Image (cartoon, rainbow, N blue to C red; front, side):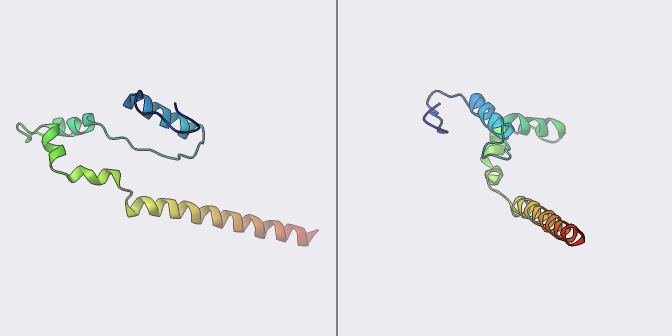
Length: 105
């Protein structure tokens, strides 16, 4: 590992990097979630179909359609927005509840 939170990727394998990210997510570091897609995932989908013929993982990658897997979708941003809304609502209810309790005393 490099200085601070930097990672020197020159000697870190991809498996080590994924393990480190999982550790940081579990430790409550600045990362909250992660998705890693593997070629094995494509192989599994290919195996589930009967009509793939000689289509390979590389053929699937060459379509370019998987490039969007790196992008954060509107739906994923909405999940974050919904979580913020819920936290704000809970906070407001808690504050309102405390102010009501104080007035009763």
